[in-house]
Image 1 (cartoon, rainbow over the protein chains, first blue to last red):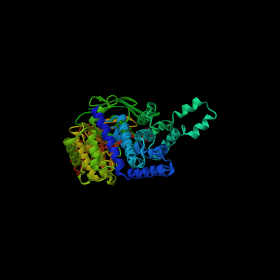
Image 2 (cartoon, rainbow over the protein chains, first blue to last red):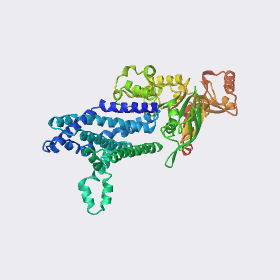
Image 3 (cartoon, chains in turn yellow, cyan):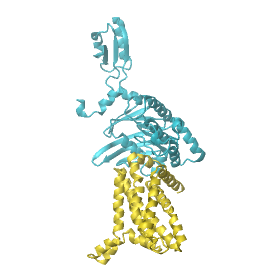
Image 4 (cartoon, rainbow over the protein chains, first blue to last red):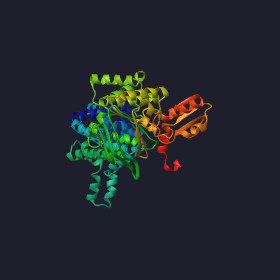
Length: 248
Length: 306
């Protein structure tokens, strides 16, 4: 067990370091921080709201991550397949699961670092007013889980192809679906002809529905369970894809 | 150390490996020969546990590769075809990663890295990024990774591919050296390497084994094996004819023994004739047989043999 965890740590560390040796990591961080700033203060009307909260910050995350998270996850497996290092990695004493978990965790940690770097916005709102920092903490937790769910999907699409662009587009499409099935304009449209139960079922698959609670400061176990099961399902599918690919 | 029983691999309807059975013991260097697409790499991928077999069994050091993959993989060092490595790492970083993956740490890790760096002549590029290296260095970096845990079983897929003649020579020496203490399999389609490094060779064609033996045994399968070639002033075809079929080759005559001659007997007979006739000989040798001829003969499709 101990050595299994050590293997996971070794692969995760290699993966994380590989983000930072290329300029991609820094480009990503700069773009991410610029965009969160823009959306929060300009598009989100942070000052006009007249309330000490980060609602205008978190509300954009499902959309922001839609493009940024697949960009982080797209190379995880497709790059290994393209360059042939997959063969090297999987013939070392490592199980497919350890490799999947390690790669996922490394990218998730990278996204967590990006999220932590948004701390000035927390400081700002605390200087300007007296926000409920519990709600902010719940928002951050939700945002991290949301990023994890998108990332697991990107991990899955990355295992499908040796082409990173294809992996990126597939991940964006699937994540977009997960947003839209709970997005108000879409659910309103559905409600015109479908039964309310059907609309609720579809909306239950949406990250928006489940992310909502966190933004309001409510950590509901059902929401936690939703994000964790999306991650679990996508990573399981990744393992099936990799196994099938090897079996030919 | 490596036992392969009736190994089969199909990709869809195509049988790439079709019932291979062989063993490799410690102290053996097995050359794995065959034309492109014969199933060499596929077989090696099954030995190392990268792809599961469709049928049959592979055991390494007593561990079934399908049932106890981790234990089997620990014993194996593997150089995949095309020698992949992570281009964004330095040579040292890459070897350090490989050492960590093999459970080496502290002093043992430092020593292991130093050892493979010396074995594979990597010290001059140790802190260079792998993406800046020439093909030969990249190749040796991946080879170093396979040797880092001093494995008991080595599987090398075309270890000399893409190297210059000096590097090829070094790698062959290394293979021969390592083979004394390990079970070593390497694939190649360069036939001189069989002589230079192998204790035994297997030739496969379309997934089936078509020959298995020492390099001498394989050469003996050649048509010319055992024939005596003689050249010189006065040599005449007619005097040689009683000994067997005679062919003229580049101004010399080659005598193929008629019936069963014991080794060396035909040579004595030719020398007797030459002495009696007073030929002034310039060349006289027994043909050992040529591997490339054997290889071509047994790996060509039936239609091309006619």
